[in-house]
Image (tube, rainbow, N blue to C red; front, side):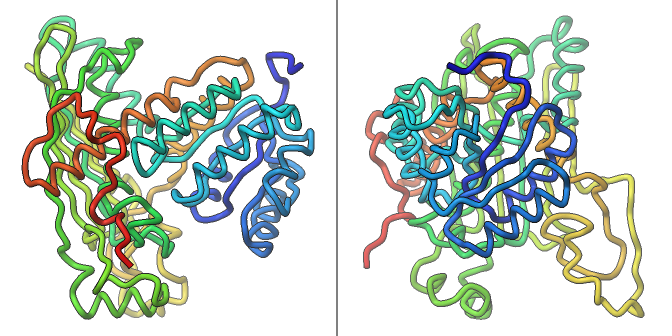
Length: 416
């Protein structure tokens, strides 16, 4: 029987790619945690991940050839699921089976966004984690961004009591496209940019519009309306570019998923008033790098944030030879190696990973449910499926919408 509080939380990672290393770097600023294991399909990636962790003195990380072996090791308290979307339900099923059978003394699971590709999958994820009596966290980093935390606190403490609650949250996230081939494959990822990035936008919007300390269930989902488009990556030049980078599996000529999405989410507050989330996401933005912009508007106030408005900027003339690489040491999804470039000094903290993981570790150590958990992940998936259905039908989708339970977005349906 695990005794709480756990002195040091021992984490095992399932997945060893780009986002896993973001989490590792953020853990440098988190107390009472060790990263002690990793499982992924690639021996090479697992070995590199272990080296990455051990070089940072974050634990004696061991590579496991199977998830079951890691769970049965007796050395893991919590799992961070950061594997590709199409693998997450199978991973959760193995975790459930090992814990229920008594072969693992795991206490908690954290899962990267989005929780699932469909509502049915999301509901299964929640049912499995609860049936196994595991604590659970939904890894939505933007909710934990320092500007979001600080801005929300100020607005609700200073402005709301005298003038009224906020009524509009705007959220935009855009960059020039994902790093890994599975992101571009609708059936594996669950969609395109709407699934990949609007999960951030709708949840940070819900968070900003919810009174501090209140459940997000106090905002009732009424309707959604969406538009999706292919602006860049279905052009012949870029179809070929994707094939060259990722191989024939990524065929945007025959199996594209959207690279632009716009969504409007209408919710009802406790007093019956409408509050709105306006979200835009894109893989067709070519600028200095990943750009996140947020606004929160109310009767007599406004809050705004743009991730590229950084305090530090670097200029490099055309005489600089460019041997420094693609520039992602300056900002994620950097598109240039010369000119005037913004630098995000601490991306892990700026994007919210540090406070997110600090919160998850603290909750798991003390057996308390995180403020972002699988219930929130499922609520986000419900909104995303409504948005996809709206775009497919070219009309507003009203809630409740039981017909969405087994709905699969058009771009995620394989016909071959």
